[in-house]
Amino acid sequence: MRPDCLVVIPARLGSTRFPAKVLASLGGRSVVEWCWRAAIRAKVGPVLVATDDQRVVRAVAAFGGQAVLTPRSCASGSDRVHCASLGRKEPFIINLQGDMPFVRPSTVRRVAQILRRNKAADMATAVVPMADERRALNPNAVKAVLARDGRALYFSRSPIPFPRNGNVPQRFEHLGIYGFRRKALERFVRLSPSPLEKIESLEQLRALEDGMTIYAARVEDLSVAIDTPADLRRAERLLHSDNCK
Image 1 (cartoon, rainbow, N blue to C red):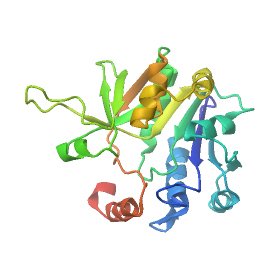
Image 2: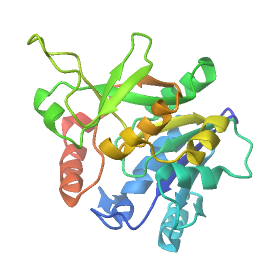
Image 3: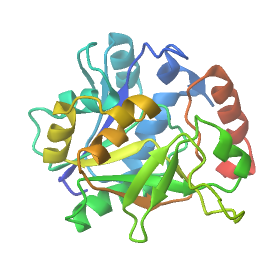
Image 4: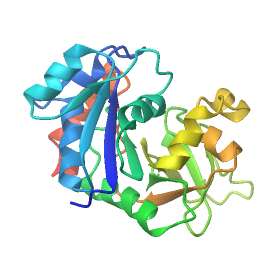
């Protein structure tokens, strides 16, 4: 295990749409435990769960993980990740959201590799091909437009790019994982929410508007985030399907 990368899983208990979702049971394990296990298997560096509640701390300790308490006042997952990283020395920090039970260890490794190999990358993330054109119309599925070299040009809840001439474009869906160089994370959390960020409610647009570069790895993960009880039921079905075997 290389010591240059810290994985932090922000796990706020008071989610608006689905309170305590990180502790919801999925196949006999909590949602956050699935994320932690993927991060551990990635073997890119130490793994911390950053939370605002002692109940999450106790749950993480029960399955053998390490959790740190961060202020309830943290405005976003990135702020929580930054708080958890203070006092540590790793130059690369990965924000793996605590509601992504099907993230693959290889995806965490790919994000780490971008930061290690591409000095032009302030941030790294991951995208999956979007095969279902109907999903492009879902505002909860965030679309990413990439340059040929993987640099992110824009993220949107709208179905971009728009097929003006009728040709269906190759679309990519953004996964909720971010890698930062430490200095980039420190820069990011000092920025105020940007105009495009406020319009789309996507914090990665804050980085793009400030001139930061984000590179994306193309991966094959299942794009399932647990935002609602319906998402949890879908995840339970997928867990027992051939997609997860």
